[in-house]
Image 1: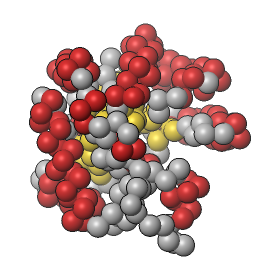
Image 2: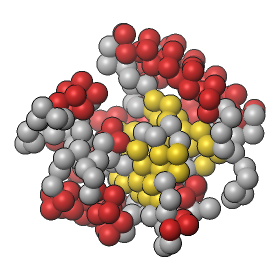
Image 3: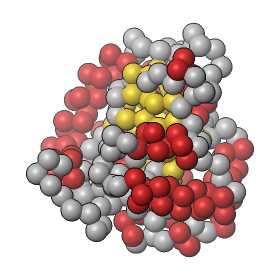
Image 4: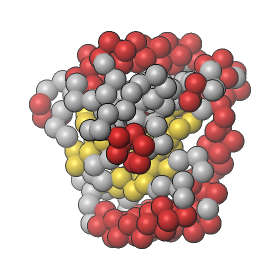
Length: 252
């Protein structure tokens, strides 16, 4: 992969047995637009409702085929919720407004975080998947989590505004600034704001070497968002952005 090429990273968030139909539809949608690889973010036990045993042999095999074809499978939290965790005045914005009680790793103690990371990796091993990276739900992490991720053996994580590679030396470990396009669809006003903000942000990202587009399972349910995403992808590919994954990008 050339260091001088421009790249497009599409990531599909919140993949779990209950969202698998939507994830498959997104993969087909992207393939028809010309995106032949992306990062798929897997949640082992989404909202404590979809247990690890919900990952059927069919889903597991489909993901293995994708991985062999160059797709990147990413551990994306473990529960993707804050069940059993308390909110404080300092984090209530992130836990109740910015997210809907989903900032699982925002203030999770390292001992519990390490336990969940290893449980997630055990699922990956059982299903024959490889986890190159970890991305926290809503990109929200405690200050100590990146160092823990490095120790556990992940190759990267990221935030909304940057990619954090875990290279072997400082030259390959510097944060990579890059704001991701992302939609909030929980309410009509959020969808309107997302469309306007992303139109502005896309104009800026067209001038950069890296464009990130983060999708959630329900994004394509809304026609204006679906149309905007299709337009962004078509324009990016036409202007020379090459589809890649987070794992592929940090391995350059």
